[in-house]
Length: 102
Image (cartoon, rainbow, N blue to C red):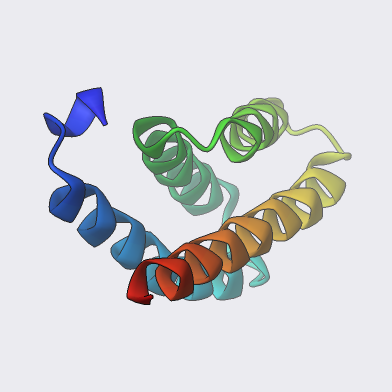
């Protein structure tokens, strides 16, 4: 909340945007796109995760980005893990949204 000046509406807005973006990010991560584009995508996701405090997603994105940059063959497995982490965040945000509606 500190990052958002205790503005709960702004935080909720950012979480909602991530929930929407998470579906498109997941789809993009599953495509066979050039490495440089994948690095940009993962880097962007890393920033969003960090800003919103999703530490597991952040760490997974950092790891994936490093593997992609050095051309490590295990990058594909890291991308799959990143997709799983992203889906978990999406589910968490949806649960939060339902809880806040009450």
